[in-house]
Amino acid sequence: MTSRKLLAALCGILLSLAAAVAVLAFLLDGMGGSAPLMHSLMQRHAPPEATGLPQEHYPAMAEMITDYLSGREQTFQFSFADSDGVSRQCFRDYEQQHMADVKVLFDLCRGVLLMSVLALLALGGGAYALRDQRRPVAQGFLAGVLGVLLAVVALAVWGVLDFEGLFVLFHRLSFSNDLWQLNPQTDLLIRLMPLNFFIHYAALLGGTWLGALALFALAARHLSKRWKR
Image (cartoon, rainbow, N blue to C red; front, side, top):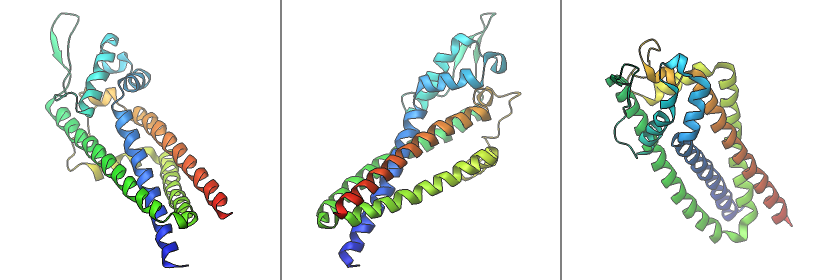
């Protein structure tokens, strides 16, 4: 294989990785900032009788959380008047500190999205410059997508077999403190977002990402065969 073909194949692999990362970051930011999705999952997995939060406050709570993660809201706190008319603040200091750490991850996600889009544009320019080697580009893209698909499927199998273990590992790698280890007896945040809430979120995110990767693979395979002729 000539050096130009190798360069084209490498360009295709890098294109696939940038595309996979861009789609993941886009989905994370979009789902994390969706108040309707947050509201739906809280209602399904954290009903009022389990959380102690009145049903009528769920839409506003979901909006506050997603606005905070999206950067539209600067303070993570929610207040409501109880049946006696007494104003109650929902979240303790350490719950707010943990959500500030989570917000940093979402800010990072948006930065990764921007960088991956810029990488796609640069690599797209490289692929255009190598257009006489478009089949190796498509083959490299297919190889890269299949590699990502295998990794995602492996994570999905792990999640099905031991989601709690995967969940704990993610938190230990993502946070430098133990503030994420909340107590459902005292902390509303973990009652609003129990383990099943995150399992549902991960299934939606992973399923959508897998679908996008599969479409990428099919398109790359089709182009590879087409350009063979």
